[in-house]
Image (cartoon, rainbow, N blue to C red; front, side, top):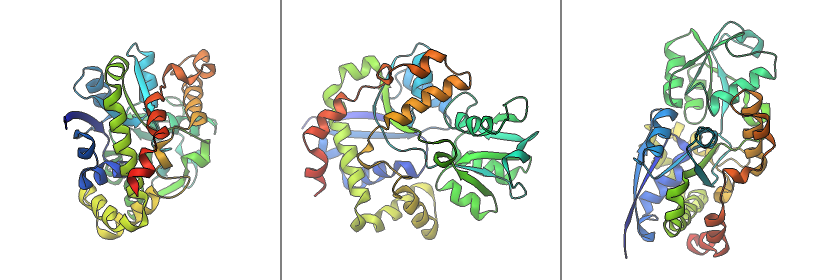
Length: 312
């Protein structure tokens, strides 16, 4: 069997459980893929590496894909992943969104994704970035959780597991889950540069099949003990925190999306909120998402029954 190296870049986090499981169980290897999994420090690095061809595929909030495309770097989102598992966290002494006036919100990068989730939440409550509160870029979720712990001058941030759980254990509090505060949202998705995607359809189909089987394997209760061990290993968690994290990752309607399906309404919300917050145009909010999305490879894989046949 020919083996193809595939360079994939992701943020550190529990959302990567299918990668951890797939590597452990040889599910990518079984489909002729030598998966080179890399972790990014922030979304700027991730987008730059994809555009420069230093990696082939990224899994991150699809808002980043939209931002790349709108800046003249054509991409293709070819699979979903999750709705972010995010919560809006604040320091222990803060009891309401109103108390964030005049305070500092920390984000990964100021112009995309979860920063926009936070801005949308606060905009719905009458607050505007740069006027009612200040935004500071710190980096990935694990960096933001640590920054909140180290600096009480940082008032709030968006966090997801395991860092949301760790933050709560340190005394920080959640003002709510993002999907409850602003509605459906397509967060993590897989995307690639459009020209590369067009030249590697067969490889992409093998990759999708391997990922979906790994996702199904991770969701099987018989494997949850191993899954908790993998989260502990990759994310440096104690056994209790690893089990709590696994519960969040597999929670229906909050964790990983079954079959990694793309939430079309959630994607349209991404476009609409970018436009509302000045990161796009009014036309972007109304346009069809197929400008950015091509699910043809995903649909071919699903039609062949790869997941259910291989997950038994």
